[in-house]
Image 1 (cartoon, rainbow, N blue to C red):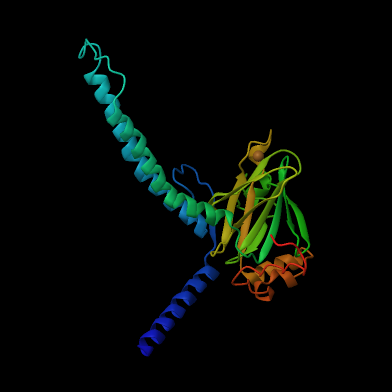
Image 2 (image 1 turned 180 degrees about the vertical axis):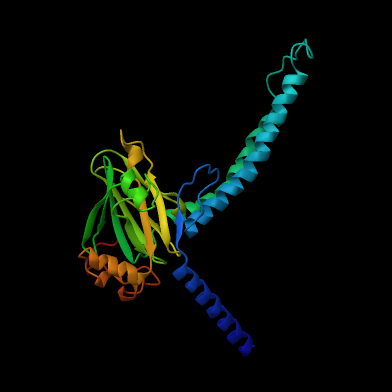
Length: 293
Ligand SMILES: [Cu+2]
């Protein structure tokens, strides 16, 4: 029993080490590609769940669509004027009406069993080790790392620069957003002018950037690499020219990058961050004599 447990722990450690080495070596580039039909490869757990949910919905809607098509064809062929010259005049059928109300309700309830947990996973921001604010402008993204004191604007590369650097034109930017791999990142998203949307499809995030309001989302990318996103809210003439480039790097490389930007490291290291409390902090006790609720 004990040996078995040790064996499985060793196996787990070996697997984790292998995965860790894989992460250190792998440098993936994830973004849209020419001729792509499906979703981009998922880079986060949330994106994986979105892809699974999308596949589930496809399995549900395909038979429904075929069934409705078959019904339509049957009606067109069986009840056209030539085949059915004197139609019957009834207008109600209780049994059919109950079925076409109850069955869709059951299907929707079944779908909600999967959609609600996914929605909660996306919307409930877990304790984060890094906070980044993205601000939309017509037409570029500004990034701010408030805990590290790093702020910069991010502009798309010119065609000449992109070609000479062998990076994708209209996706690559001069100043990418850097994040460490395997870290919960809290994204604050807002706008300086019109409504934009901060979206990285492979992370499964798309958050509206509203002037005068700060929206929140989060992601955790275990695999190092370069990931591309775009503004996904039509915001004006150059809406198509405000790409998002995220570099997911090792903690050491992230620290080097923060330093090169003149930022403070202390708050950037997850190890230095206090452990997230297991439970919500106890409510502050009401002062003596305060009226009860
Ligand atoms: Cu836009």
